Image 1 (cartoon, rainbow, N blue to C red):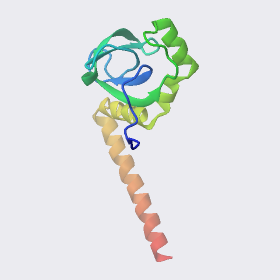
Image 2 (image 1 turned 120 degrees about the vertical axis):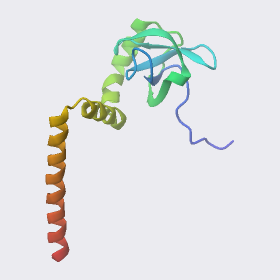
Image 3 (image 1 turned 90 degrees about the vertical axis):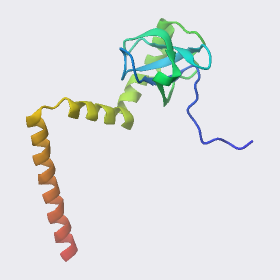
Length: 137
């Protein structure tokens, strides 16, 4: 059998990003698989309560908590997450940084958007001048 390109599986210990609900935007860990539609998730370090959650409202991330036992309770999940520094690894990922940048951009007021416009113009002008200078040389 050929190796699959697919690497993110629904498995115990998989870190997931919640797409909807009161905890949307937070990460949690799959602690138990209920059936082909739902899993029990828990996020004791990200204020996500232990609950049943449908897969269609989860996004699988590349992160995984290794050797997490099935049905582990919140205390054990918290120890495993802290031991492997999952939250820090998530915050350092490009995916999380991009989400943070998008939410920061959305929270700006009119003056903040204007400041970004001016900064982009200045940067674009500077790059254009350097490229023109290099192309002459």
